[in-house]
Length: 251
Ligand SMILES: Nc1ncnc2c1ncn2[C@@H]1O[C@H](COP(=O)(O)OP(=O)(O)OP(=O)(O)O)[C@@H](O)[C@H]1O
Ligand SMILES: [Mg+2]
Image (cartoon, rainbow, N blue to C red; front, side, top):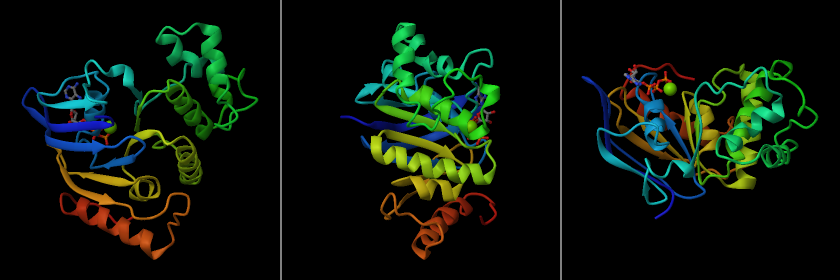
């Protein structure tokens, strides 16, 4: 079995129940979005999938193996993925490979090969402070993608960006995913972002989080137009699922 399976997972921190009986299945090459209220347990879920933490009960399987032993199969871009200010952009993007034992020269070569694709060409020797916010996020994403692991976890990758840059980055990620077909799980608060990018949007309840709805996005990738009525209809369904569990305002 490949892809990702989260089966009946519950997670508590002491008396705080964060996840309850959570089920999630992501097929290889699928783009899944997870949307839910703040504090519902989305980052906690990623910590379980990446093997950084263990469920209280239930199991997480990555490519058929328990997450704890399959951590080499998951590339995780945490919610606050910081670039080291004293390392050049190239050395920042090579960091993940170096951390897994790849020699510096090869790590740099592999990361460097992706610079053009990530819109970072010419900035190899720059320092993070010389990049725009969108470029910094692309560099952090490059550092994750270059690991070439079967499952990619992105926790609010565009959360800190202004809305114009954010839209630009969403379209860019949509194009990159279409070319590479990574298996992606994207955590977001942004309904439009989820519907623009995902095959399936998994809607979480507030804590203790469980999946309250799974919304398929029946729109062709690469031609999604957030001004189209079909797009708005999917957004509405996600919004209604969220509203069923908590008070949210319309986008
Ligand atoms: N290591 C921990 N120890 C104790 N409590 C924790 C720990 N990690 C997370 N929590 C608690 O679990 C709950 C869920 O946190 P989590 O970070 O997963 O939420 P989230 O859905 O990612 O929120 P946001 O959308 O704001 O990023 C919070 O109440 C948080 O305080
Ligand atoms: Mg979070």
